[in-house]
Length: 238
Image (tube, rainbow, N blue to C red; front, side):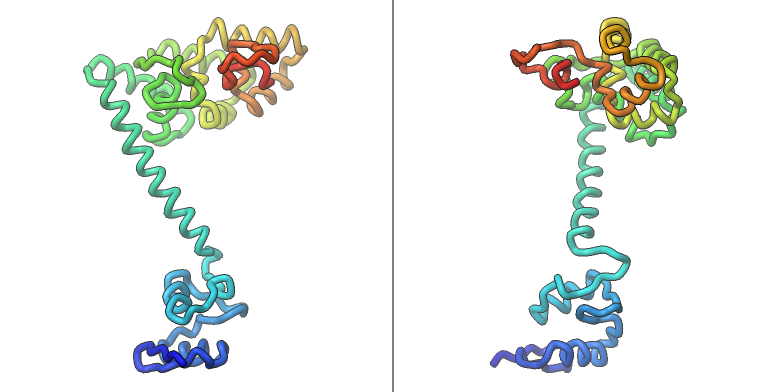
């Protein structure tokens, strides 16, 4: 029979689980340790105790409403976000090298100030829109370019003319940042005309559609069922 020593406390594997937890609570001053009860135990302590005693984590409660999977997911998400910021910033800096390009970039970021985005979010939106940060939406067709303030403002003004508020635009840009890199006349205005004339979608219905599926603004091909390998920009998705 194996014996587990924890500080000055000795436990045998045959000891009842309720006795083990009770003894641990007294010996280690862990009054919150419990198995399947209303009391909660923090993740790090429960992990140590459960690992040492081979207690299934599924039977241990966690304080602050965080399970191991949630903690792991949060940690992974944080690391992923930091990695993206570092990676995307490097990509942008490698392309925007001259003072003139830097000035253009900062001016376009300023145009997004009305939407309360962070500096990183502005870089991400513009980077994805103009090919400086990889986006599956463009495939291989989007060349890298430094955006022009007139083009960015032109698209924002047009979207506002479709009864989209700044709050609407904030949601749209987060969902579909590539819209800023679409062609205003041929794609945005052309597609809105198609929606109005061919589908009778206008006014409030048009606004709701754009918020629900903003990528419709950038459709530029219609394979009609015969795939052209440009699915992200095809009307067949509508």
